[in-house]
Length: 238
Image (tube, rainbow, N blue to C red):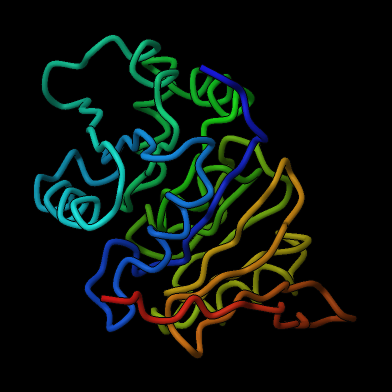
C-alpha cells in the first residue's frame, strides 16, 4: 500500500451525528484519505465497544464512498497489526479516554497506530478520539472534575473537546491555563474539527455554522482565548 502524508483530524464533538449538515466532517475525512473508496476502521474502545456507537458509524459510512470495518477489544480481537496497517482511515469514538489508552497500551495498539500514521493512514476521532493524539487532553474520565491527562503525544500541546457543548469545559480550560497546569490548549466546539498535516495545524473545518476552534494561552494571570479561522463545510448535496 502506498504511503501518504501523515494526517490527523480531531473532532471536538458531534461526530457521526444527524445534524442538518450531517456527516459533513466524515465526508471531509474520507476525501482526505490517500486513495479513493478508502478503508475506514472504527475503534470504539472508549465506550467499551458499545454497539449503539458502532451502528451510528456504519450508518454514516453507508452514505459515503468507503469500505467500513470495526476493531473490537471486548469480544474476540483480530490480528491488530494486520488490520490497522491495512486501513486508510482509523476513526476513534468517544468515551473514557483514560480507560481507552490503558487498553490500547496493554495490546500495543498505540505503537501500531503510530506506525500506521507514519505510513499515511489518516487518524481521526471525536471527543476521546480527538484528544488522544495530543501530548495531553482535558478529559472527564474522572467523575468529579475535568482534568488534564497525558495522551499519546503524536501531536504537540493539549486539546479539549466539547468547548461549547458542555458548560464546564470553557471555565475549566481557562482555569487550567491561568494556573499554569497547561501552557496552551486547542479548544474545539462541537461540530469543529482540527486537521493536522504532519504535526502542523492545517486548518479548522466545521459542520455547524457557528462552531469554532480556539487557542487558549496564558496572558498575565489569566487565560486569553483566540478564535482560529474556520471553514464551514455546509450541508451535503442530495
